[in-house]
Image (cartoon, rainbow, N blue to C red; front, side):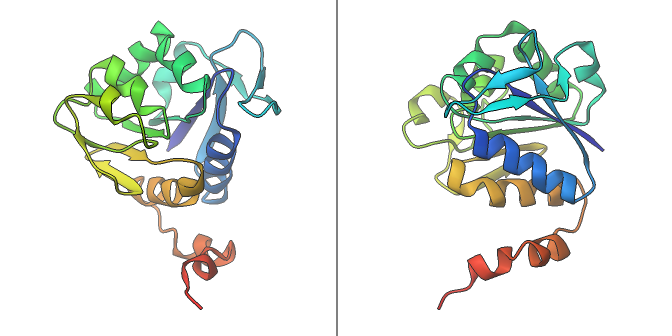
Length: 184
């Protein structure tokens, strides 16, 4: 399996980097791919990140694309026709697609959420017209997975690991995630 996490100026650093970290820990080949014309990209909180790759036609070789939120990162992804074309291709070819926080607006523009179960950061519900909107932390519908926002990133990433057919239980234990889930 190969996953591309797409980065645009203004991306939510926590969502992009922690998702990538967890997928790599699960030994899933994961690349940070920027839609900009240089590898350095600045996130929503002024963190400069160096992507692994610059977006090109090799995007179609991946098994999954993940769209982090953040503003204006999500709108920059939504407004890039190459990204829209890639999302449509992944949908039409039964590949995996993930979007968290504000990024489901990209899925809406690509025309792939009609009748599908989705979630997003609170306040984006009206922009996802035609979908079955749920307020769950993480929502899966076939090979589409969406999540609410930064605090949900670990749940989102572990759900992707499971969706791709890997067992995340040892990973959760090793990262002490299970401690988070325990109540006092």
